[in-house]
Length: 277
Image 1 (tube, rainbow, N blue to C red):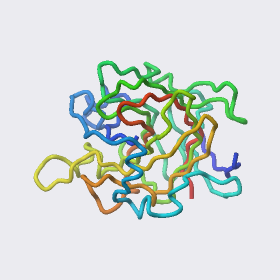
Image 2 (cartoon, rainbow, N blue to C red):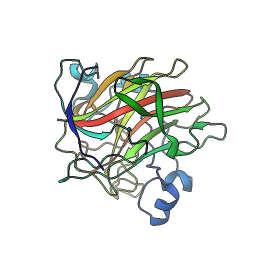
Image 3 (cartoon, helix red, strand yellow):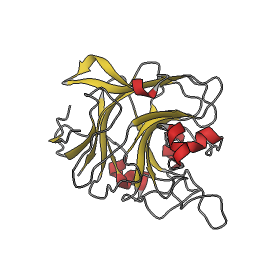
Image 4 (cartoon, helix red, strand yellow):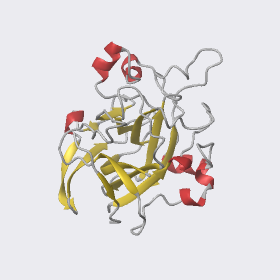
C-alpha cells in the first residue's frame, strides 16, 4: 500500500448499513451491512435539497455557518492532505495512510433493495473505472449509476476506514473531486458513519434508553457535469435529529458514504478522496 501527502492544486445521505463484503461480514457478525441482508430497514430520508434547507442539528453549527454554504476548495487554498484513495491502482481497496494510524477498507455499493431498482456496476469490484478523457493527471475514478426506482431510501457508494473504527481526530474534514453525468440528479449526500449512529456500534438501538440508529452526520453538495473539488469540514456535518448525539465521534469513524435519496436517478464519479488538516 502507498502513503502520500500532497497539497491541493486547485484545479446520501442515506441512513444505511456498511455493505462491503456483506455475506462474509454478516457471518462474522461485525459490520452493519447485515441489516440489508436481514431485512432491517433504516428510516426514509429526504432529498439532499430538502435536508439542506431543513437546517437540523449538527456536529458544530452545521448549515448555519457561512463557511458551510459553499463546500468547494478554492484554487489558492492550501490544505495538507492525507490521501484516502486516488483509484489509480485500479482496485477498490483504499490506501493505508499514515503508518502510525493506518487505514484498512474498501469501496462498496449499497441500496434499499427496491425490486425495480438497478444499481451499476453489478459487481462492486468494478466500481473503479477509467475516465475518458482523463482528469488532468488522474486516469481512474469511482463510477456508479442507478435508476429512479429505489423508492425506500435510495442508493450510493462508500468505503470503510478500518476493520473496526478509525481515529480521524487529526483532520478537519475530507476533500474529493466529483462530477455527475448530464442525466443524473445533482444533490449528493456525504455521510460520516460513526460508532454512535452505526447499528453495529453497540450504542444506538431499539432497546429502552437507547438512541435510534442511522441518524448519521451528513451534509450535501451539488454536483455539475464538470469536475469540482469539494471539501466537507466536520463542523458542517449535521444530523436530522431523531437519533441525536452531542457531536460526531470523530475518533470512531466507520465509513464515509456518497449517496442519493429515494426516487432519484444518479450517474456520478468520485476521485482523489483525502482527509485534510
